[in-house]
Structures are given as structure tokens and as C-alpha cells.
Image (tube, rainbow, N blue to C red; front, side):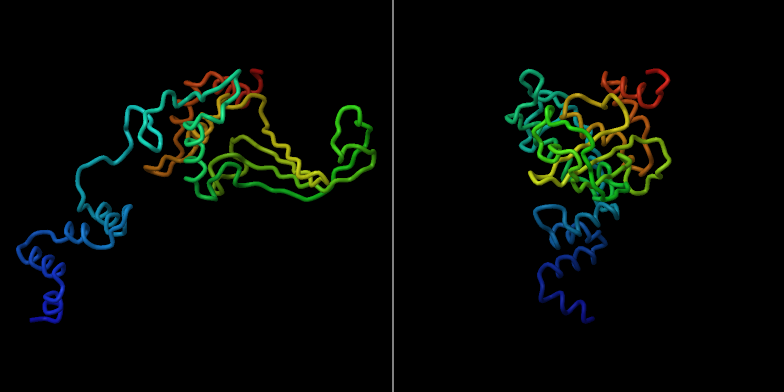
Length: 242
């Protein structure tokens, strides 16, 4: 008897696996259900899916409706709860969608991941005290340290700088009253008006997870189904139509 056979006799699990293999059956399903398993898919579960031990079953999310973290169907996944047009803090569906989106991204594929910036200072050249109470704008000649950054928006660090893509900018003023931030984009109309559609906008421009290729069908589907998205497309992609 080999050393492997003798050691399996001291372990009931190994003995069962050896018996299954000795009868000509595939021992891997038993190994998968017994070793390295936790609350989520462990290494054995993942290896079983890759090697083909698991057959059948669903391979993609094709549900007819959205559900939240508790499995409750969403009343409307494209419109948040508002009062006078302003989103409400009591809209748990909005918060959960934003939270899931923010926590599911790799750092190099976040929104505005690639860009260039520089430190400098902002100097007040005209008296604007009648327009604002901001301390850093109170006196002519007053200087405030700033940081300015220009960036592309989507598709991550592998996307070329010269490709067609929205451009963003951000300015941070380091004032004595706290940091003051200004952000903007290089087109007059945004993709969507409702913040609950923000994750959909960005995901429509991601690469297809099945083949990691750009999926323009997803982008055009979003633009065609969102009125403000159609206006954005015409105003930013074809500026002559403005």
C-alpha cells in the first residue's frame, strides 16, 4: 500500500474521496463541497467553475427587475425619490445603488482615473467683496494655494489621451476657511439628470466583462433611453449641432 493510501485511512474525508475515485467516479465535486469552503465562494468553488466540474446553472444576471440588498424589488431603478426635484436622504434605494457602484470598482478604472495636475496659487485681481463673503476673495492681491487637475472620464488607465472621451477638470482652493472645490466637464449638458442613473452612465462606457472589449451598444442604449443623454450626445459629440 502506498504512503498516500495509508495516510487516507487516518482521514475519513480522504478515505471517502479515494473510494469515490477508485470506483471510477469524479472525486472533485466531493472535494469542492468539503475543502476550503467559506461563507462566499472559496478557492475550491472557483476552481470548480473554471474546470467545468459545475455544469449548467446561470452564468449571468438576466433578472427581469432590480432588487436591493435585501432582495426587495425596486419601485423604479431609474428615478430617485425627490421633493421639488431634489433627491431625499430617505431614499435607501438611491444610497444602495451608489454604495454598490462606489465599492465595486478597481482603482485604475474609477471615474476620472487618468489625468495631469499642478500646484500653484490663485490671486485676486479685482474687488468682488460685494458679491461674496469668502475670505480668500476679500482683498485684491490676496493669494491662495490651489491644485488644478485635467483628466479623461471613463475607461481607466489603458485608454489613450487622444481618444474621444469627455474631459474633466477640478480645482481645489486651500483657503483659511477650509478647502473649496470646483469641478466641471467640457460639455454643456450632462448624461443624466437623476443621480440614481449616474452608475448606469459610467457602466455603459465600461468594457464588456465577457470579452473586455468596448461595447458601444451599451452606450447607445443608454443615450437612446435617456432624453437628456440624447441632448448630451448631440451637443458634445457634434458641437456643430448646438
